[in-house]
Length: 297
Ligand SMILES: [Zn+2]
Image 1 (cartoon, rainbow, N blue to C red):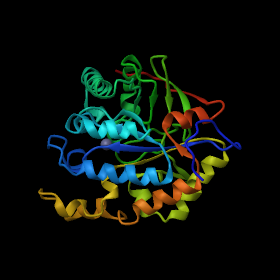
Image 2 (cartoon, rainbow, N blue to C red):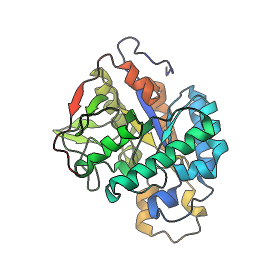
Image 3 (cartoon, rainbow, N blue to C red):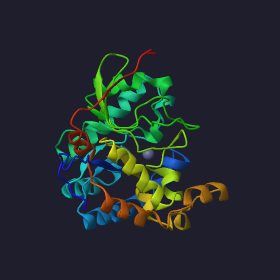
Image 4 (tube, helix red, strand yellow):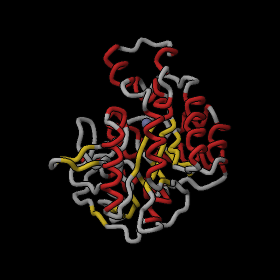
């Protein structure tokens, strides 16, 4: 059964269950659009599902969402979840200057800290937008007071990912010589390839058995990784109620597999030990070190 204790028991690590709290239209279609009201009830569905399993995870909350719904931030925290930052405006980090990224981080951190009166020290970049081309972002994170991160995607895809990045929780040495604790999204090695099944389209489309094997592979190695999701993935009727032209292609891609999504997450929470990112980091006795060289910018 799942528990929320933080140290590894019976040799099994704790894996991180993480939620990026944002609004589908603003974060996926156009970051200049205002947030719809949908993220609020969608996040409540996630909170209810986690409460039923007695699992506490990490919620990376977008600054814009926190501004619009501070009571939701308080409810997430009151339910025992770790509250961390998903940045302020959901702008992709590789499209920002270091100065703009710094401002976005500080704004989101201060916002959450003012609402809760606690320190915010963990971060996940919008769309995993820290890549080999903007590794300077890792140093900006340390300089602005962040200690853990879950932004480096361990599989290279069309839009993001870093080749050779570890697929398990580790200590990351930044190009500037700083250290961050990194918990990457779960990936599955099959037939010489690594598939990012810990969230997004892969998680929605793959049968549960594949996702279970993925976590078992990481778990058996004594390592920890993260599952990620968004509140809108808990709402199969999201698109029906959005007053905005959405192409059939995007509708199809984003809508596929949503009906079975909550059930898959629930089975996973029952089959493995899940907790917050901090729990996952604490559960691995000695975190391996990975160094990024060749600082640019
Ligand atoms: Zn996001």
